[in-house]
Image (cartoon, rainbow, N blue to C red):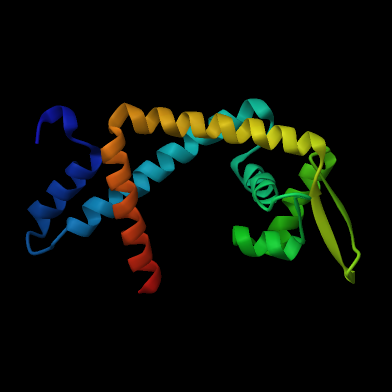
Length: 168
């Protein structure tokens, strides 16, 4: 391994090897890098959303509505389940996004006790801009490190790893 390709995970692995040579740290090498990569890219993506006035969490709400297809409407419960948020956490995000005019809440015509959350035209325009900005950051990072074949192979391997960990 050349010095230019060393990363902080290598130093951690070396420390464990010195202190506990009996440990197999192969999993730590993989998951440590996945964790650091996810954290780094989350920060960069958050920076791409900042000029648009939204956070990553707010983007997630808007993007979930956008991906749901026209009329871009879901219940708060559906949003909470998709985003793995408590109803209290969801309410705070919805309040802020509604105040900004990016979505609206209305009574559910099929359930007197329920609500529907719908993207406004302003929200639709903003989320389309935000998804482009986020993807640009991610694509730039990917293409700076891997060619198309490597990226496809990595995607396949990560899909297999995710499926295996979710089954376990």
